[in-house]
Image (cartoon, rainbow, N blue to C red):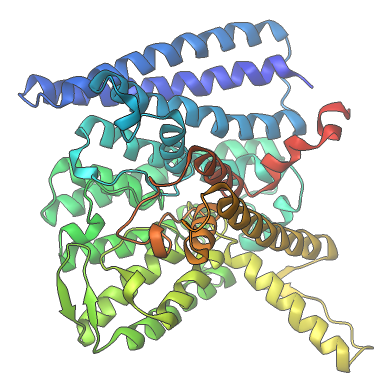
Length: 513
């Protein structure tokens, strides 16, 4: 394995993160110069963290540049992808820790006083999970809140490009899965297709970002909140600049804009590529898109009927009797937020009762479309698994009938079936292991099963809020340091589709040719 080359590329990743820190620091410095004294510590924290990261990144780049080989094989690509998130989160969390160190001499009393909390917050950002340890978001300097939102935006863009540019070349059924979702843009070799696809996806992502920022500004938000919430929406991250999340604004307009862009972020970005090439029929006929939208509509109707006529507690603390319009508004927002794994909230769904909660927990596992910024198992895998299950049921009473399993016009072969079923089984096993680990790591009697299970599910599926002590109005700050590390690992496992991380623990990965 060409470790020097991987180290060199990791150095470049760190340098890019540092440049983003400097950009955020520049904005915070302008606020400080304008009289916002709270930004002084944020500027210092970002400056010091960027300096440390730049030195380490440059050292890695110089060390790796001596390799003399620029070959990115399968093992190198897997290692680079996994380490980019694992080490990137450490660097991204450094501004939080530095800020706590500058602001308070007694770190033990500070929310970011332990590096595990900082790592958790940064990993939650880069994996676009949206879980937080903060109990008072409004008290954090705006410079750090902007950096927090920036980590989500970078993570969202990174995972889209990763999916279409790296993972399809790594095997484990990835390439075939991508072809079933949306046919490849060209029939050329992999390299020119990747370059063209990545460039167009960057442009699409930037365009959607600009449009939502302008719409939120027109809806009454200031530029800072518009940018931060746009970054969190398109990345399906869910970090807000207020304790009450999107519910802070209590605005129909803001809710509707956010719903639309959450839905767009949960769509396979390969379809936007097809739109850019004017292949409108391909997009309309895409089976995953139709099922994705159908699930959103069905879940919205079920939850809407379940909460209609009852009292709902909004995120700002207001209690409201849910009429028809309010039921549609709250159910649509929370359904879209959870299935796209964004994690924004306008109401405390932890008080909605069994049926809405059961639907939302199910949506946590279903997730958004593959090739989107969303997490979860992905709709296309659920479709394939359902097709396989129904085919096996038919074989029970028609053992001699042989049918070709299809999703849309794509044929699901045996390799594809195995890859999908093994992935779903892996998610279930990791969910159970995560739940048990949290129960074991926390003091006896302090963590109920609902909290442990939904915290595990919300982290693994990159959602953020769960139920119980990690519900919409709560946070993850009470977890012990070991539990925060476990949750951070679940986040990166879910974000990188499990294989890219788990493969690192196999000795054969390091020893095989």
